[in-house]
Image 1 (tube, helix red, strand yellow):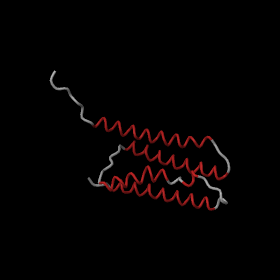
Image 2 (cartoon, helix red, strand yellow):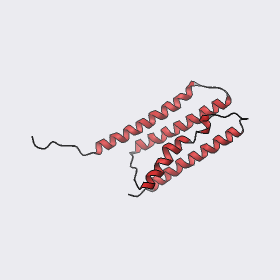
Image 3 (spheres, rainbow, N blue to C red):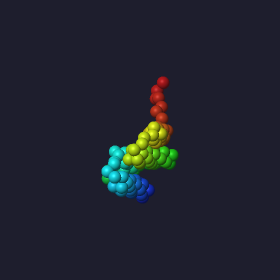
Image 4 (cartoon, rainbow, N blue to C red):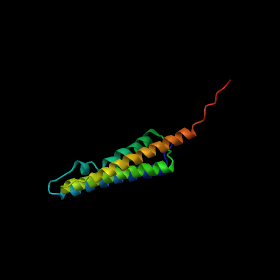
Amino acid sequence: MCTSDTEKKTALWYLLAAIFLALFGAVYEYFSFGVWSYFMVYAFAPPLLLGALPLIWLMAVGKHLSLPAPARWLWRTGVAALALGCVISGVLEIYGTASTLTKVYFLAGALFLAAAACTTWGRIMSDRPSCERHGT
């Protein structure tokens, strides 16, 4: 099966987001007077690991990813929430403060990803042919 142009564009956007976040983190930490944060260093990871790499891998093996529209929206929102949570947590750590409210971004991101997985699983199960008993 071939990969659609939409999947290629989506993978490119995830890759560009990861590159932007890596550059943003590097520039932010350059001007932070030697203070740094693991959250800011790894803010590029969610779009790279949960977006670009899986899509690139699927394209490499020749598979087509057919997710329902709500699942795609939920997945993208979850990845964005995780990346934003990393950036905000990193900014607050570099600034020298902390807030328990930043945990909301990670929780929301995880819930959006779980909802996307459940939506996809429900679609897979509803598209499956039903088993009928033969005989009695």
